Amino acid sequence: MCGIVGYNGSEQAAPILLEGLSRLEYRGYDSAGLAVRNASTPIEIVKAKGRLRVLAEKTNDGEALHGTCGIGHTRWATHGEPSENNAHPHASDDRTVVGVHNGIIENYQELKEKLLRHDYVFYSDTDTEVALKLIHYYMGKYAGGPVDSIARAMTRIRGSYALAVMFAEYPDEIFVARKDSPMVIGVTDGACYIASDVPALLKYTRSVYYIGNQQIARLGKGTVSFFDIDREPVSVEQTEVKWDAEAAEKGGFEHFMIKEIHEQPKAVRDTLHSLIKEDHIDLSGTGLTDEDLRKYERIHIVACGSAYHVGLAGQYIIEDLARMPVRVELASEFRYRNPLLTDRDLVIVISQSGETADSLAALRLAKEKGIETLGIINVIGSSIAREADHVLYTLAGPEIAVATTKAYSAQLAAVYVLAVQAALIRGCIDEEKYKELLNEMEQLPAKMERVLEDKERIQWFAAKYSNARDMFFIGRGIDYAISMEGSLKMKEISYVHSEAYAAGELKHGTISLVENGTLVVGVCTQNHLFEKTRSNMVEVKSRGAYLMGLTNYGNYSIEDTADFTVYIPRTDAHFTTSLAVIPLQLLGYYLSVARGLNVDKPRNLAKSVTVE
Ligand code: AGP
Image (cartoon, rainbow, N blue to C red; front, side, top):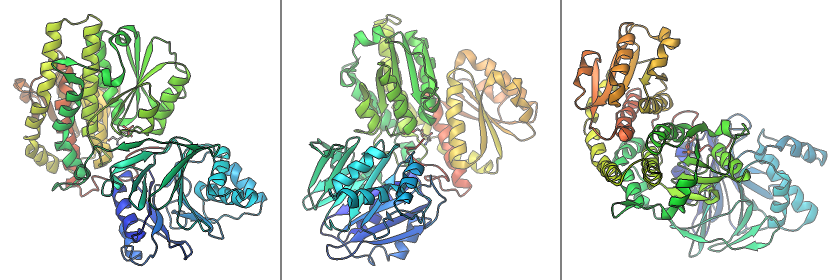
């Protein structure tokens, strides 16, 4: 999704803005631009299609743009093709209002028609140009100043936005507004910074403000004040970001993805240790009580992409351990389905970013219906974290690669903890079993490290199959949920067409796609289902498939069937996802590297999908 940065201080703004934008590259973009000024100079705008380095070359790494106040943007096209003309910043024709925007303005056509009636003309296909010209219109009509005109525009705009705007008549200030799109503000002695995400600010400050929904911020050189949509001053709390700057660097690894794959044991250890204290699960930080866990009759897990796959694994685990019915649903479906919910239900929204538009909308729908909500979230202070009734923070640290790995693993750990606690409270397991499960969980990080030691074999296998065109991942039960995640990794970063199938379902149609040399990965970590899945593997092998098997140490009979096997350490059957997913992440990663692709920033994808 689009990335926004801003700087207002005493240094030259353009190099700082370019550096900030480079920290947001992971969000995905197709063009970029800067707007910079000094107190006595007009606002200068430079834009470029393509990678950030094109913009850097055009501005001589920012040196060619003079000014200590500016805004920058990386654009991920929604309205209008990727082009220099559609790139941000956009401006009113007299350049008195210049701004950048992240989000989608749903009624932009209606607003555009209104402005056309007032003789405005438009040079781009973007909704952003409409928003800025609307602000310009209100500046002229009511002459109430920037906060007033932005607030008036906000009451007319439907949709989501994070806006950063400069006004010619207010040379030393930047104005920010947001609704349902992320925006963070950092203030130091003598300077203010803005960014769509924390990694762009970490170099300068860890004290940040998360501007609230439908609020406006007025940024001077080291000062910030906040207003609500009625232009009334409001106070916003300053938050200390715990992540260190190093966590957002590659630290010697070739890509963020492989670095984050290696950080998974730590992400899981940290998340577990925040929830297990003195050999007991302690959910007090989330606000969930034992009474709550006893009271709920049904759980709905709502999420997108990999977070949804965590939910699919969670369904098997929670239903089996705590004997509670769990329904897992894609947030984009849940939000338009008029779901049947009762006041004894709990809606769990899982999200790394806490900003995914569909997940946020699903959370709001549940809240509107008066249902209790729990967010399992990685980004502190994000929209879902702020709006959910209860929050369980995963401690994965900043995740930069578009393909999630460590956040996924930390989410799984959070789900295990919830499942085990609910199982104990609801009398489904005794204290002895509880201790045994906690002990198994504690051992997961070390076992994950052991799986990582086997990476060279997977690298070799990926290089051998780098020309694969089609792939299938099959498994039953939890192994089906693992297969879904393995298949997504393959698609998103290696661009290999792949499908995940419940192993027993294959013969109901899909098996006709299997031909000589088709790569099929059979996931067999559930011992009670091992023989069943293995016989499905035999079925595809007899139709010419090349088979990779993924199973626990000890299940060596798989070698009678599979052409290549990866083993994972044994653990409790409910927790195998944490170990089995790693070889599949590595397979996707090494295949992408072998094909020479942009691993961390795959085409067409954005890290955080803040539009519908
Ligand atoms: C996974 O690798 C993807 N990047 C994507 O499916 C992601 O999990 C999904 O967009 C949800 O994001 P969230 O966790 O930030 O809500």
